[in-house]
Image 1 (cartoon, one colour):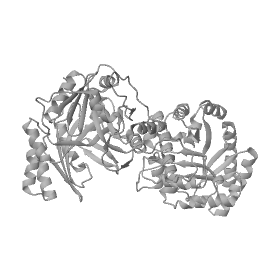
Image 2: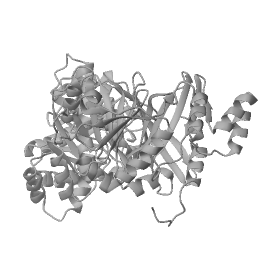
Image 3: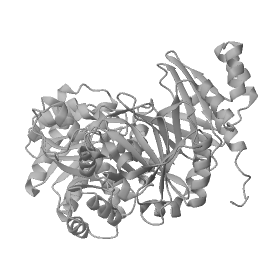
Image 4: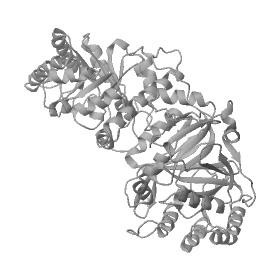
Length: 630
């Protein structure tokens, strides 16, 4: 499998783009003409710069409005092409993309276009070059790859071929089996892009909202299966037009791009094992059996404050690490670890972010396989000194820089709490408030980072993604999307902040980066849990009484149930499958959220309609701006 990416897909000048593309491990690069024109150097210098980065120029593009023109425009189009061929030869590439015409003076007609391409083929053959024809989804006469293929077929020239672009085919919902009949030697290159499903003008959709395979909603895997069925085994290249990508980190976007292609081709290979597909060997996507623990980094003062909150929530101090300043708190199957070490990654995380949830432990089917797959997909493997009596727990760096540990039930990792922690006497500890397990973990990031997080999780784990929804904060919108394991034992909510004034944006700004902001813990009886917590001195987040009047009327609640909700400050939601109850602790630190939830029936949501009201309550409890931190 050879991978390529168009320079238009990432930010920076041409030199910066090439460095990022090479560092991400791509084999080739498409030179977008505007990037070349903006570069202050000769074509030969650009070609040398590409090759010095270990890359090959896979394509020079685009050449527009060529076919079907009347004279004198037709003659001028051939003259323009000849000048581009000069540039190509100096660059050191042999393939140019010609996209279907949108010119208002183009005449149309398959035979007319085929004749133009035959003549163009004669010209490029003298130079040892090739031309690929691509159907733009908004082309004036040709907007379907089937018509573009017919033009190429009738042109009948070995130096004229077809360029397939997943966006143009999938945006128009063109039947994919038609691709399988195209001879592989006539497909000169394949360009890939995904996109969210948005009902808008095709050109605007294409120019602003494309993203990496796996980050959108288009059936890119099925498209690539059809391409692979032809026997095509050359470059697969990303051509992404995305406003956020063009303003983001060239290095990070390039890494995402390479990860997306490796993941995509792994999917294709598994979907059609009979196809000859060259892709790095790796284990299949990993099943997650649950969140085993969440670990906080803190100093001694922060640990006392967090430990006090956990004790109020009826957690028990269950163990202390055999050799480190690390304490385990437990209730039901929920394990929360507080790390106050003065060296190592946890300490570094505390220095940068303050008291924060810097690591998560996932129980997976096979920890070694999880790390092996993550490594092939470009994740950074995490290693730290292992002391006496400690396990070497497999771990990787997450997208936001935190850690993801992997534990399984087939090795000593299943006994990590017995091996690494000494039990603590339970005298004086709470007996529990009915909290059973972690329902979901919320991670907060800047909105433009969300595609990276999404791709990271769906490529590594057996998960699905829900549609993106808008969470209304009184200070602006927060985009939210959920990653769920197939059996719902893993639930991750990704919340993208667009404004620092939102609660999510404040968290990112004050903790200096993206990370875990929200821990939702499940109970089987939220009213009993609320009673036990109240008896233990717990004071819940205070919800406006106006909310309860509305909820009672909106859902037609029994007055007795509505009163119970009011008394305990419990939020309520309902859908056609079940009911959802939410109880919040006051925010901790710079906006960390502890939530208690109960799901009844098959309710599958996350209480999104309640977000504006609990966020308003949480903001009322925040210290005024400018107040010094204690």
